[in-house]
Length: 271
Length: 257
Image (tube, rainbow over all chains, first blue to last red; front, side):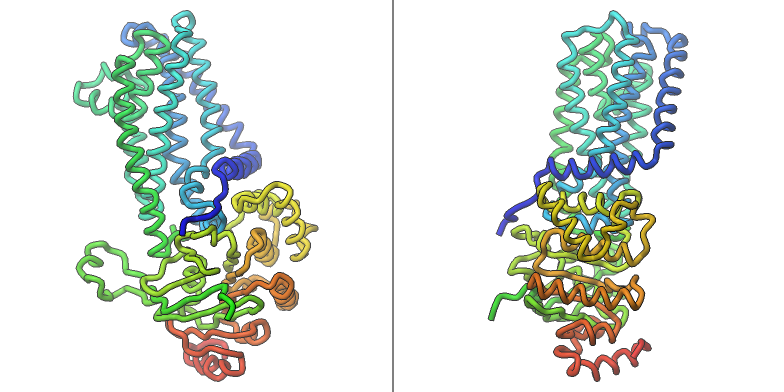
């Protein structure tokens, strides 16, 4: 018999969003601290901008180039840290088992769990993107906004898949998730987030192009600023589509298997 | 006979020792470090009764409760809760089971009791109006209205335990599964708690499976008792039937009898 009634995903996401917001507001110092850190990073990039020649960045200022990278990293970091991180926290407290005893199936729980953290990261990313665009000045092509949003959407879909894969592994092995750190490190160093891939040896540049953040940023920068990207938009789009084509089925297979596994060994509440 | 709220038939569960290579080499046989938590357990809970699941530490009570809730899948045997398989979440059956575990930390401590209940009620798919009504009803029944708008971190253990009962009742369950749910309560509160559970069973015509290692609790609260010893049913029936076996078992286990 199939499940007759489950809680709509939107309602689950709203419940988690509301709880996340209330919890975040109960730590006001953490909010201020995060805002100050972000502003400090923006100022640092702004002043470092004068030290980097714009020729290597396709005419974009380094501050603008790096702010786009920082915005994308906010989203990637949120997905990679929050999906497994929040799951682990909920396992530690027993909240995950309590949530499993509701009409919400596990996949909806895992998908909706980080809704507040993701929306907060999206807000921070938006602020950084606007700042990056403003700093780019006249170089912006308004016709590129929609394609840039498409690249953003595809990239975030890949990030969410990576986050869910990481959560699936956390569910089973509890500690030592191999995905999150590897992807974060590769995205930071090789994918053209702060350092153009042209500056890397060809092999590392090619590896870096296969981290989702790479083609996402290439596509966004190229759409908005013409030649500022390191890869043509069509090529970046194809690369993102291939990545999503690999990550999505993997996630769809891995998540139910992980849930099934913890049910068999009774470790949903263990950590 | 009316269909049972919970029907467990020949349930076996062994927790395998970690190590995929050793597990593969054992070819399904028991390995050193494996724990046989349940051995062919039969259990039944009907509407209107509180079935005590009595046994010393390590006798398999918690595993049995988790199997009944669908949080643990048995190796062999069948678990039917309200006629459905809870491990598969068939027919939204988990939403009709209330689960209360001991030492409950499963609330967001910086949120108030009411906010916590709202969160879990939303996951139950309840509409805002129904949820608000249920929250008030359950808070009133557990006498938590006066503290409901204080953060849970300021509550006593007993209050949090009662909040866990509130949460379990939110979905209007037909079956309540409770694992040493009174462990954080002082003796005076325990009596009130027992009266509350008996009233809930009577008014709502639900069933409760109540895991405990407290002989007195089993005697005064439960209408029927299932005695577990090392994962198997050692005795079953009214307290008078089970008492001699239970006392001997607890004496052997160095328990409280």
